[in-house]
Amino acid sequence: MIIGLTGRNAAGKGTVAHWLVARGYHYASLSDAIRTWLAEQGVEPTRDNLTAAGRQLRSEGGPGILAERTLRALPKDQPCVVDSIRNPAEVEVLRTATGFRLVEIAADVRVRYERLRSRGRAGDSQSFEEFLRQEQAELTSTSAAGQQLHATAALADEVLQNDGSEAELIALLEGREPDWRARLAG
Image 1 (cartoon, rainbow, N blue to C red):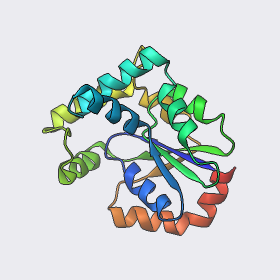
Image 2: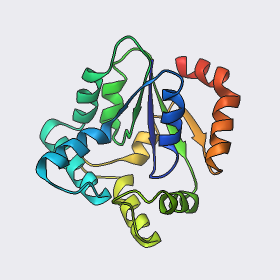
Image 3: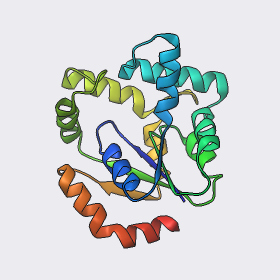
Image 4: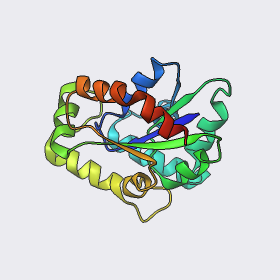
């Protein structure tokens, strides 16, 4: 089984991924392929640089290239969680794997911005206006190589609404665990 995670910045994808890893899932992130490439180029992994580099890699290798690279590296003998899916072509590639299910993690924009501010990750927005600008650039793209969060979210098999605290998200996951896993198993 492969559970793919999509959603907007600071929606809670990382928390869901950590929860799954604690239950034996192998973790992979499509963004890690971009971060590795940026490091090789000597470029800081800011949000804008990650977005631009992802666009470049998709332009050069096709819109599903990050998923192709990640899928080849996944272990075959354990369940996996794949984070940072931001393009419908990535979903298409991952759906070629047996048991793939896409989960969108959703949260209100103000809630997400406050989470972003409190986590203090390098490259995160310094103002709400910058946060909105970066998000707008990720939502839709006329290029197949760009981020298309709206179109990707529309492909989700499951949506988890996460407007509360991290503890509330964990309680939601644990309370829904048997039912959630059964639905994800399809």
